Structures are given as structure tokens and as C-alpha cells.
Image (cartoon, rainbow, N blue to C red; front, side, top):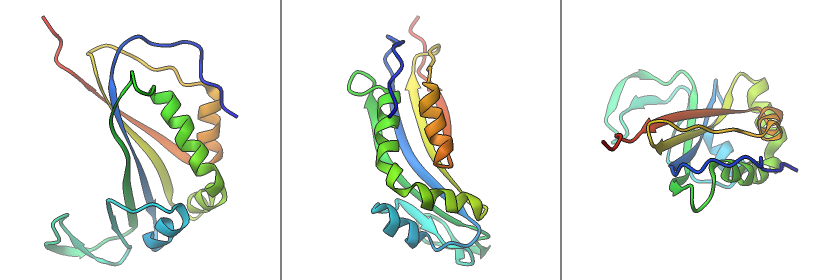
Length: 151
């Protein structure tokens, strides 16, 4: 059980979280079935490359890819990022062996977080949260987008 850290930042921010998966050969439909989630975008290793609009491109995909958006532009005043990550990890906990298998087979799973906020702010993640991510073989990716500073 993860406990949220007691230290709280008062800066407001918004975040989005998506789940991304890569694998050398697995059919991404297997991931959809296992997790019970619909992909926003996916392809299978060996499939003809194409744009998101479906226009064919040269060559074939060298790996399988699967992506879904889990939440979009959530305000920190509604749910802190750390709390959202804990909630999502609890959801993925039942799939731990499957996620570890992906990693053993040369693939990877990632919770990708896009954060929008002021030009200077930070996060502190509880070590137990980070240990749970590692224990499930899930990478945490953060991309910070600073809003223009008010003069």
C-alpha cells in the first residue's frame, strides 16, 4: 500500500497521463484484452507503416506499439499527480505478471505524464510509489511544459 507523501506543493498545474507500450513482436490486441482498455493508436510489428490518418508509408513497423490516454488536463486542485499515479498503479497491479513478461521479452510499458504549469515548480514522489512502478516494470516518463510567466 502506497502512502502519499506529506509534503505538498501549493503551485497549481494540470497534467495528462497516457500508457504506452512497445514490444518486439507481441500483437497489441493482447494488451487491450489483458488490460481491458481501448487503444488510442496501435500497430503490430511487421504491419505496413502508415500515418495516423491511414496513409501508407514506406516500410514496415519493426516493433509493436500501443497507446491509450488515461486522463487529460486534470487540475492539481482536483487530484494531485502523485494521487493519480497511485490510483492507476492500483488498477495495473492485477496485471503485474503480464507487464513484467513484456519487459522480460524486450518490450516496455510506460506511464507518460505531460505536466503544464508555471515556469518553476517541482514534484516529490514517494519512494514506495517509485518502487511499485519498478516492481511492475513500468517506466515513468515526465514532460514539463511551462506556461508563459506573467510579467
